[in-house]
Image (cartoon, rainbow, N blue to C red):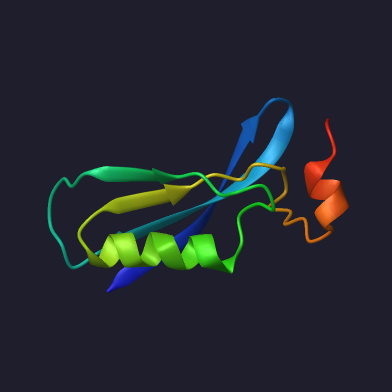
Length: 82
């Protein structure tokens, strides 16, 4: 069974909310994969990617790149410089 969790952490002074997936049916250690979302942020596509990797035997963690789990849908906002 694939176990998924939102994982809060802090980075660059922001509260981040990453996403972790692992197959609880697989015992012992396993390789890990770090998923780096594209510019809009940690969306359903990236969460599904983590679940698929977990089903293949990996422990997968997707980063939050904007803070608070925000996904940016405005194309102009995505391309603005910080």
